[in-house]
Image (tube, rainbow over all chains, first blue to last red):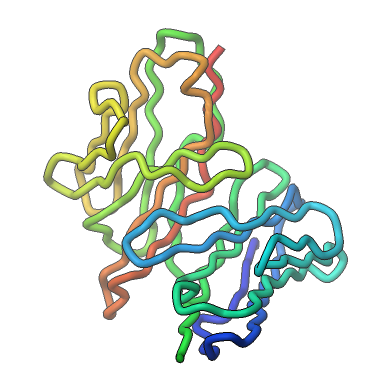
Amino acid sequence: GQNIDQPTEMTATEGAIVQINCTYQTSGFNGLFWYQQHAGEAPTFLSYNVLDGLEEKGRFSSFLSRSKGYSYLLLKELQMKDSASYLCAVMDSNYQLIWGAGTKLIIKP
Amino acid sequence: GAVVSQHPSRVICKSGTSVKIECRSLDFQATTMFWYRQFPKQSLMLMATSNEGSKATYEQGVEKDKFLINHASLTLSTLTVTSAHPEDSSFYICSARDLSGGHTDTQYFGPGTRLTVL
């Protein structure tokens, strides 16, 4: 079956760095997405990785290893507004999105 | 974990026809379902909130007469794109909120439906 795993919840301190991992097993691979979702709001697109390596975008970076079925989202210089759920989703060979359950990130002062 | 399915996964239709997309929660009851539209590498755009047994709540700018939503049961919501045009071609994603077991803020997303209007 198809499966996406990510931690349910993480806690970090304001100003610190946090890494949210995502492992996947899917039928084919057409890219991996990271979204940020604040409570009561629609998910916001953060990144898309289809090739191995690190993509940096400001305070957020996303890494992909296709051979390992692994990705991580790295958040630097954490701010209180980064408290949200972070969703990992993989597009399979049929261009269907397989979603992780999301990681709730709690930022403490 | 909770599973949300969508049917069909992809559909191609002629301009002017109507297309119905189903969203089902497979192992939980969802009083609230959400319909999103996604453009490539962009955020999900919330179109409407579907409430079981009542009218859907549409976001500003979304035509309710064009995008008909019916949430007839606790496990099924449908989105009908009426008189579809090429600009309606997109990836439509639904999600369902699971209120059981205290999961008040948990949303489960469907795999999406790719609509192509010729």
